[in-house]
Image 1 (cartoon, helix red, strand yellow):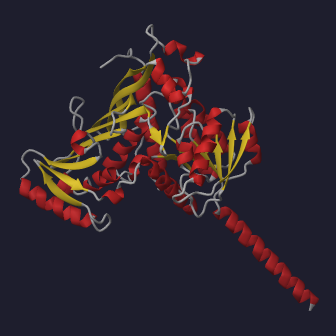
Image 2: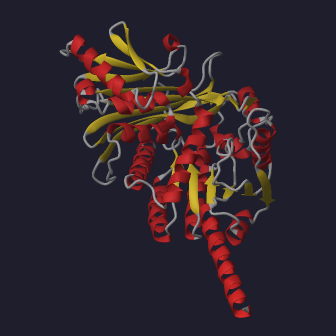
Image 3: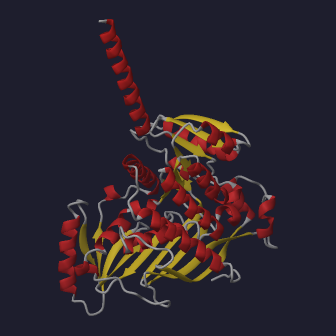
Length: 461
C-alpha cells in the first residue's frame, strides 16, 4: 500500500514537474536592454496573454531609463484599458554583463542607441536568448557583417531574431500589397529605369512630436548620426522592407544576386539651438555634437537621404526625410507608388487626403477604364471577405480605395501587432522561411546605400 502510494506520489510529482517545464517554455519573459528610444515602451503599451507581466530592465541608468519606466507606468495608470506590468530595473555600468549573467527572461527587447545595438544582438543570441529588435539592427557595413553572423548563430542556437516592421500593419500598405497580386488589376510590375523608377517610396518624419499623448523628449545622442544612424540606414529600413514585402511577397531574396545599389546621397536638416532645446530639454549642445554646429549656431544633421537600386531588376527609389515639426494638423507622412503594366497603385498623404494615408488606383495608358473598373470591383469584393467594408469609388481619373476608420488604428498600435506576430512565431519555434534572408537583404541594401552616400559631399536640394 505504502509502495503504491509512494509510486502514485512520485508519478504526480513527475507530472507536475513536466507540466511546469512545459509551461515555462510557453511563458514569455521580457528583458528590456538599454532602452533609449520610445519604441521600447510601445512594445508594452498592451498586455499579451502569453507574456509574464514581470519585466526586467537593464540599463546604464540616467534619463533614458527614467523616461522608459515613466512611459510604461503611464500605461499602467491610464483609465482606458490599463496594463499591469511589473517593472524591475537594474542600473549600472555593468548592466550588459549582469543581464547575461542573470538572464531573467527569454526575449530581449532592443530599442535604443543604434551604435550599440548590433553588439547587443550578437551577445544576446550567443547567450541563447531570443531578440525582438527595433529598427535598425545595423547602421553600417561593419554592423551588417556582424548581423549576418548573428542570424547564423540564432539558427544554431534555435532562437529567433526579428526586427519590428510596423509599416507592414498599416492598412493602406496592406491593401497596396494585396491589389498588386491581382494581375487583372495591376498587371505585372514594370522594370522602370534609373530616371523613372517603377517603385518610389518616401517618408517624412519629425523630431518634435507627441507620443502617447505627451510631447516626446529625445536623448541628445539621437542627433548624432554615428549613434542614431543617418536616415538611409535608419528609417530607410522601413521603406526598403515595404518594397521587398509588397513587390515580392513571401519570396526569399538573395542579397548577393537580387540587389544592386547604384546610387545614394544625403543632405542635412538644420535645427536651431532653440529647436534642440525644445526636443531634448538641454540648454546647449553636448560636446559630441559640436562638430555638427555651423557658424550660425545651427545643428546640421545628415538625416535626409535618397537611394536608387534594383530589386530583381526592378528600379526602386527610396527617400527618407526628416523635418523638425509637422505643420499643425499633420503628422509623419508616407508616400508609395508602384507602377504596373495595367495600373499604378499609389498611397498619398497630403492636404487633399486631409493628411491621412489614402490608396488610389490609376489606370495606365491604353487600359480601358471600364475594364479596369470591373476588374477592380471584382478584386475589392474578394478582399472585402478579409477586410469588410472596403470599397472602390471614382476620384477624378483615379479610383480611391475607401477604407473604414476601424482599420486606421495608428502607428503606436502597430507595435502591439508586430509583437503579437513575433509571439506567434515564437510559439511555432520559427519564422516564415523568407523572413531571415529578406532581413539580410534589407540591411545589405540600407548599409550599402549608406556606404555609397559617404562618397559624395552632403548637399542641399
